[in-house]
Amino acid sequence: MNLISSLLDLIAPRGCVMCGHRLDTDEDFLCRACNDELPRTQFHLDPYENKMAQMFWGLIPVERVTALFYYTPSTKASQIVYDLKYHHQPDIGVSMGQVAAKEIKDSGFFEGIDAIVPIPLTPQRQQERGYNQSMMIAKGISRVTGIPIADDAVVRLHFDQSQTHLDRWERLKNVEQQFQATDKATLLKGKHVLMIDDVTTTGATIIACASALHPKKEHIRFSVLTLGFTCS
Image 1 (tube, one colour):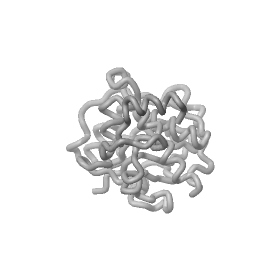
Image 2 (image 1 turned 120 degrees about the horizontal axis):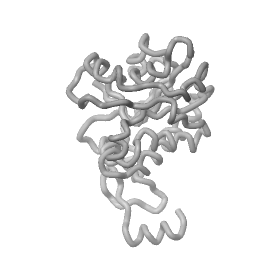
Image 3 (image 1 turned 180 degrees about the horizontal axis):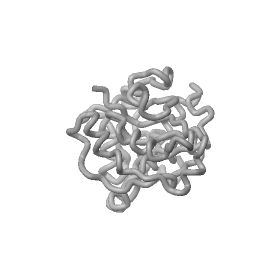
Image 4 (image 1 turned 180 degrees about the vertical axis):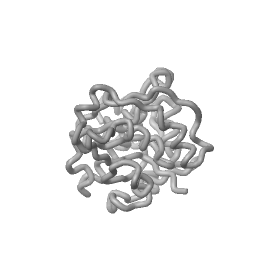
């Protein structure tokens, strides 16, 4: 932390996003105790056949799949995603993307990946929020790995209804026509693409977005990385 940041930290102390306790100058959004308590999935140690990866089998040409932590609503860990999405704290996404990338980089998870595609928001939703939380996570991952971000290959056309109370197949139906590939998607032909989202519950949104990018002639392979995974 530079001198200006240190002075600002004295004037307006930063709090841990999980517990609210004051952060030390060398801590970023999470205090050490909460970082240690974060319920990590460790899926990157078995990225091909873990429970999250199985959701995509037979639906998209998936390679490796992981999430940083198990996401359960109304827990301390869920506050990370809540503040990122609803409390206008985009830097949380960048920071947590870096945390995730640093922790799994040595496992070989990123080997052979050509581009990062964050799940897009509709223009209206992005204007309301001011940023795309998946893009913020992607930026953090890109800073650590050097993998370029392809944020113009697919767009989100509309968002019909909340996914919260829908089962897996209802979620798939709800989002299946929401994404459309752009002309830039042809640049991903034959590439290995890393899809990024904040939380995966059924995988429906990622499947729909990947499917829009994957007409049979393009031969795109996908890996998936999210901050949270909802374990049902």
